[in-house]
Image (cartoon, rainbow, N blue to C red):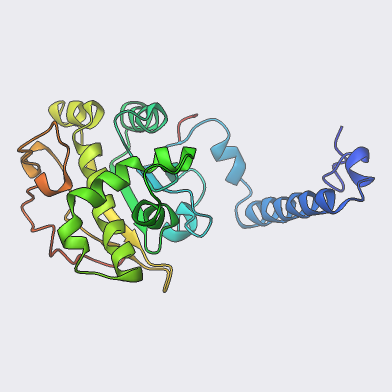
Length: 255
């Protein structure tokens, strides 16, 4: 049984290797965080233990520099998070679609945020790695590579990091399109359930978010000319999404 005074078991206390010291540091950090939360709000964990009621679903990249709660300034229990390499939301990904379904149908989130980040390694790989490169990552980023191929002429106008960042933004639009055309979101809109889909990009340079498109709040905001191809360029919004420069400000049931 863990030593409540120290937050560690006797076995943990005897650890001497570097690896054990590293994890012990994390446990100490956790204890300090827990105590700080309780000091600020004695009922903090009591309110979270049985239910979560987030209003937001965040679909973002697994990059360690892009933590959803901190970026949005939200506490635990306020945002439901799905993260993966390249912030993908493809219909064939059961993980992403199951998360989307749970967020919309069970948690009743009001906002779905698809967020990419500039200088994304997955996007850079989609630009640089040959298709024949035998790796799971290469297979995973095939959807980003498809976006690259469909916007090849537009991307040629950019070089280096600017080209990567342009593809980052195009990839966000593609994933927004995937979310909007998913059976889960389409069904919610048909039921007149309030769900808005947002496309954001995060700057590693200054830590700020920027909207790439106006919020999509229903079928009337979305005119899909070719659903089968699922192209970001098929999005026709009331606001021109190619030039939209929105606000740079960022907008509990049991899981």
